[in-house]
Length: 235
Image (cartoon, helix red, strand yellow):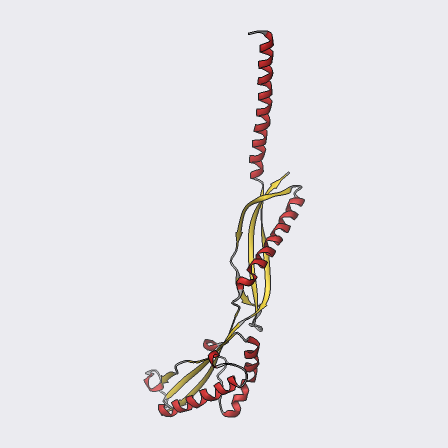
């Protein structure tokens, strides 16, 4: 082999070694950077009005004559229905549950003298998307007292329930806002650590939760979602 060929071969080997060195450095840097990540969470909360209400209207009757109690329940139900429909509700929004009968003589633990034998619980249920209208009627239900109808209150078994059922309509907007909040937190972390934000490594969306805003306004709901995102950090 001539001296010229040896020089060319040596030069090519040297160039190859330099290129290999750059490739190795890039690979090592890339491997190192993959370990530099930041995980942030983005929160989005939104207050929405309930769009469905379930209002149980409870009355109780007592006595010793079941047929007489039944007749009184029928009159009570008719009066309550008339009150509801005359104030804007439809028949389709009102349902009547089967009465619950408690025979006090069948209670072996009751040793007291009984002034009446039967206690009957009667429940009409209003289910409506017209939440505000129902809320007004709840405030006006004392008008039934004028007709001798006492509505039972304070029974947790028959509490008024408010729901929000249109979650799908606000999901995209809330996810976008939660993701943006996470991005802002990651940008701030990267700036404080003298780095720049890279691509997303992993991302997960938490479950949506719906709760009462507070115990005094169950008709106002708080919708909440948290996203968790991991970003690569770069120099």
